[in-house]
Image (cartoon, rainbow, N blue to C red; front, side):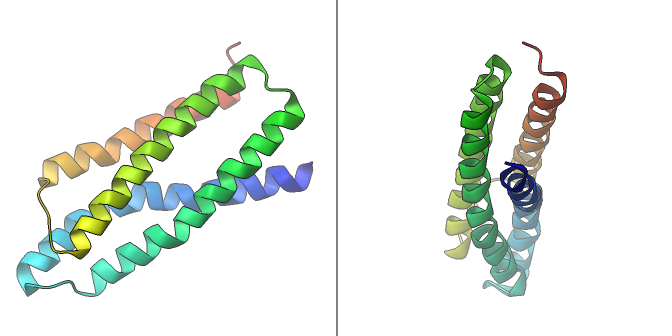
Amino acid sequence: MSWVKIIHLLCVMGWMTSIFAVPRAIIYWKREHARLGENGPLGDLTFRLYRFSFGLGVIAIITGVWYGVWLGWPAWLHLKATLVVLLAAHYLWTGRLVRRAQRGVFTESDMYLRIFNEVSVIGTIAILWVVVAQPF
């Protein structure tokens, strides 16, 4: 079971990189698009990062569920799973923003995107607290 946990942690780390980086990159992509009038290399990089880490997120969730079944789903793990589902929904919304940006549609303000980015940080802190403290 150690290998499942190792794979889970590695995939979570890769997924978290994208969760934190892609919303911020959209801000710079938006500025680049305004300057160039088209999608430049930053847009391509942002899309590729999102696409690559999507697979890592799927593997992280699958191995997390596998490990949870092995643990017998203690009560704290239900809270963690709920928070992960919310973080995954945030990530899927990020994907929507990336898809729209590929079409050159940037309707969200820089402030919205910054706040959107910080929501994932707060969610991650909550997940880490539940895993470390195991409150119930």
